[in-house]
Image (cartoon, rainbow, N blue to C red; front, side, top):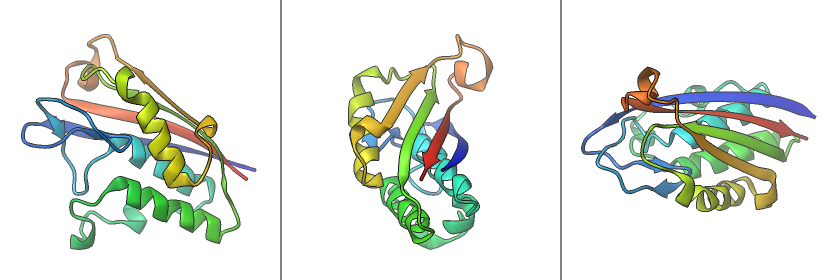
Length: 155
């Protein structure tokens, strides 16, 4: 059994979709990034890669590569799971938190959990997604960006 931690942050800007956990969330602003900028899936991917000591998503899917421009982070997560499986591991569980002042994420959390479980080839009971604000403190509280933390166990 191994434990991993992941963290990611993306800036909020006009003219981009707000995709979190593989769910396109209605919003006036979206997340800026080379791929679809899914902050939650990036944190989860980094946690899984870290647990297997395989580096991070930047190593495997560099933002300097045209191949990953606009990439679907659910597909990238599936590739991460394949990488850890090649090392003899599988997902034990994932616990994650999205930090965003807005939009409100509660209505979308179950769909996020289902998307993540499907990409990881595990049961939804092994996936936890939580959301919180920072009470208008810091860059997330000011609505400038969204952050996510994830921890996982791989077995």
